[in-house]
Image 1: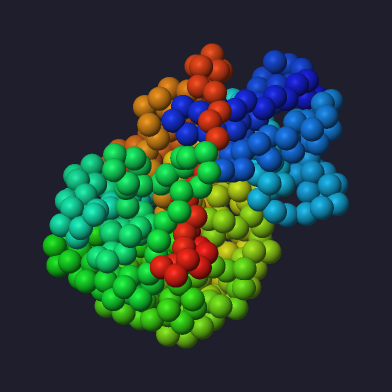
Image 2 (image 1 turned 60 degrees about the vertical axis):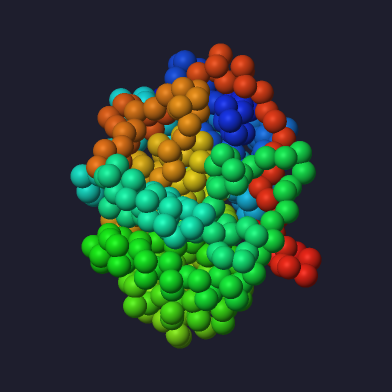
Length: 404
Ligand code: EZ4
Ligand code: CO
């Protein structure tokens, strides 16, 4: 029995930060939701859905998830890119939600059932000095986290990535135009071994320690950083250099055995094809919302598994709780899961997006609710309208525009 799509709508809300949600309802009254948030470019995805995708969805059989994915990807003629792939992801996740609700199963069961008991997540610790970073690590350890990402301000550098500005969260999306930050890589490279040494000296080697370079190094600088941190046994070093040129990672790999992770800005399997098949990375960090949904993420994970590459999905607060819920079902169901990033959303965001997933002792579980287990309170969402906001941009001290 086909299950035609009756209606699809885009909902934009800002309970502290902007989220774009697609809600699809079928003729039998079941609905599913998907995250369509692309931080700082929200209306591009909303318009893509509204003007170009939704008219084609009405009347389509909601059960044909793979066919719909192919229809939206191949059928557009224009392929890939964050806007297209986020829009497709929103449809894909909403359809998986509907299918699992109709099957009366949590989504991970439809995806083949669980491959593990629960999902190991890592937290973010940061500090203006090494001493308050160490305190932050201790606090996260007390909350139960077994894996912690460490970032700190670099002495003599105006703005390091991952460190809060005043009482704002470190991961700003504010200002009606992007705020500008100033960066110095050599100072950072000299500082990082000191930071890692302090963390290992205090917490020993059992705690998994991660670090994010946020695309700021050249390949040879990245190689030098990884080499200097190797003795501290990082769980992974993330986004050391941008990867528009995937070959750049070969150079880093030649110099270090430190595990490498990348992928939060990727949107297609082709962005990581060489990184994976040539075993230039250890963790692929593509996100459900930005890399074509559950359907495409499963393809990337299966491909990665052939080469011993594990997943480590992006899970920052600029991805909505819907993305987090979907990611946890995905994480539980694939054989080559590595780790999942976790930044708790604010209480207000959790209220707008009530969810079945839970956190305890450094582990998360997607819950047993039918579907992906995340909903949206539309009345509350409507009380928090969109506010234009951008991620910062980054410049070197001489004014050269750099990667944020
Ligand atoms: O900077 O999601 O690993 N996590 C990250 C994030 C990203 C933001 C970009 O909007 O790098 O904090
Ligand atoms: Co990152």
